[in-house]
Length: 375
Image (cartoon, rainbow, N blue to C red):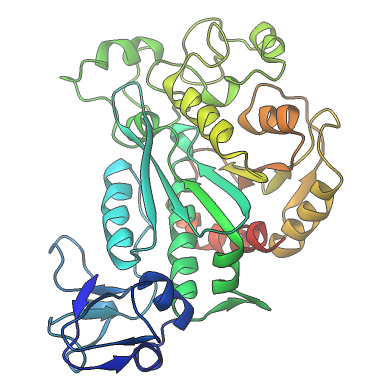
């Protein structure tokens, strides 16, 4: 947030007093000369709030008041503070995005597209480095726990960037400088909300999804978008094979690839994003199996194997080069761009994975997120 200085002070003093990365303070305040601010000047400070909505329970994370330096009565947050261990729907995501973008003003938040129902598809961009990385989750509605895990890691990463943290020998601020991270935590917001909350009787789509779901009001296993198209079977990488062999020949709660590639707005949004950025690598988080798929028709470059080995070392997940599957987002990326692309299957069990698995999933998988940046 923006704060007004009570007195002349060096940025170094602020950084030391509140355990903030000096280089990041300089990045946030390029207008300052000689790394010093004068009384009455307005500067940008991360991890601070003057006030926040009562709907956010942050009291356990407040540490001290920064009254000595600034005119405003502000609160400095002292640890990663998001609570993502819950049934994580679009509203949960939007609440957490509000908090994160306020706490970390260097985040760039974009709405890169909208779903069939007009819900926003959010992208966060972190860093300005030359290595362009993309991560996404919740391509499938009943895999909403991927969004919760992704947001937990992002909270840890951002806090580590600001507070001079590291992962092993890799300093977080250096990763921030070296990479540009495109982060899309919920590709399929309509499907997520449907899987978690079901279809309200007065919703305009109720009749259609009830018919697709064979009359059942239990939508917890719903993978597709709201139109009954599986978004991860929508990409032009031998899509016709999946069209021919997939059992659903009409809209279904899972596996129906649509009538043609890239017919659905969510799938189009992700394809457009890849085209715009020309990412160096992508990682798509799904559930379940504790496996990492990394090859596609031998289109993957040699370095893809080195990267996935690091993923496996850091997670215990099994690396699998080839599977009999086509038309997925990762398949298409590797096929078209000949760059490293990975599908990470988080957790074990039957989808939707119970939230009780959250801690174990995060403990095992967090190294994959980190190594995506430093490899």
